[in-house]
Image (cartoon, rainbow, N blue to C red; front, side, top):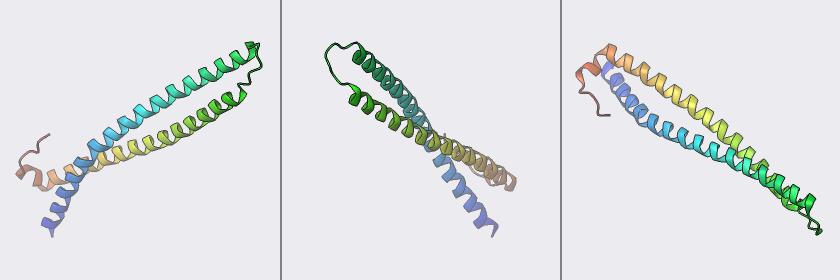
Length: 124
């Protein structure tokens, strides 16, 4: 029964080794998107302020309020997406932490059982 258990551990370790880089890459992409969202929100704020300023100084009766409202609505959606991304990134960080913890735990178990000592080192 110990052989089956150690085989499961080796398979589980392999799966964890496969998942970890994907999780880290996804985390980096989410972080990048969040930075873009913040930049987009700042641009929307600047544009809305500029439209309000133009509207106040405009001699011709041009109603820019609907456009300002659309920009503010777009900003609200950007903030909402940013919050969703922030929650997803936090879940990814927890998952990455759990994968690393489980990998370390399984490696310790395998080393204790002598499986890693008899196995050739894996390629990075």
